Length: 474
Image (cartoon, rainbow, N blue to C red; front, top):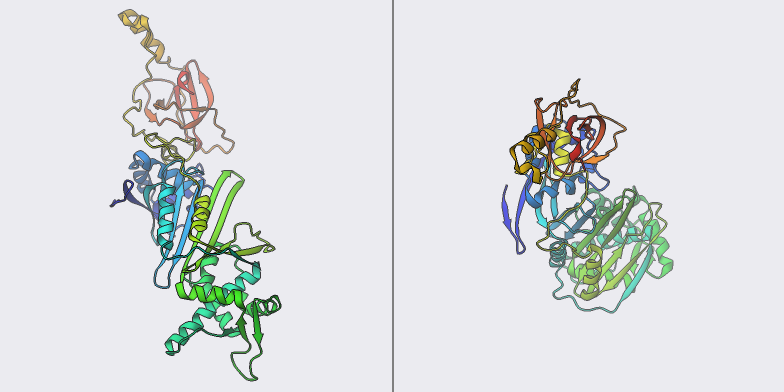
């Protein structure tokens, strides 16, 4: 583990190997949430390493215990994209809470592992985003909007990349000025290159990364046809090419597109932000914006409300630094975390619950974990030796006539009825305090399936069962 000092706190980094994480997919009691990174990562074609995962989870302490639900079932995810022609960055941030009231973590996925860094607040992520795009030197702009049908927008992205490629060729040829236009062949080449290489420094790649579900397949074959239809909208003009010219027709930009292209070429800083919030099991709030930073303002395209059937339209707006900052702040939301107050939320993906699912006989790591037979509550009568003996006898349920061992058979129709108290309790293999025992971590949901006097047999979500003092269940 390596330490990185930040302005807000001492941040840490950990890594979970993909071999270790593969063990989660083999555990029927653990299912990744809708926004989890793990749901989109192909497991390695090697045996899983369950013991390594248990060791990594057991080592999480303090705010880092929230890394487990943030990774397995995040309710808020933020993807940040940046490219300036030389540098490309893709940052992913995860929070267990939809409003970022608790700690968040930056996730980095590489070939063999998923790394997490944190803990972070969304205020820190906001500052990181604004620092990347750099508000300095950007003038306040008069609002300007252009509206595109979805296919027209994709074609315009190819046009921007083709225009940039043509500009680079002019520079390599030591010619000044800007290209007058681009050809159909340029458009097809720009689209294919943008889809082949995921580089947020190029327009096609940037928005394909933001909304891969909307990027049209094989679009290089029809991008010129879509641009042709834009001829009648005043956005550009088509000049027929000379007969035999391999470049074909040339497309001359209209005033609005020329302004956008020239501004983008002068700055070449592109950014994207995708925010997803899981409000309920079937309700996800989605924000997806991307664009270009120029000296004359921020050109911003909002793709949040585009349906999957591609029937919507994309509005591209020119914003000044103030309006841009307000929009990004709104997308990320405010940080409601209260300083000095420990974060709490109900989740079935807590570190301890996952450990129990991976290893039913898990022992709670906190010093308060109960490791002996449950004691009765102290009463005034317990001050005398005789009363104390009576209290102790009542605190330990009498052994049942026929002890039943703990089991570990998955229960498909399992439904929790109780919760292990916060301080944790002891579970026995049989309704007898002399039988083998383990300590259960507080907050674990269980189902009571049988009672024998003061004893209760409980079943966890993965099918593990054991006997506990039923009087202490919440």
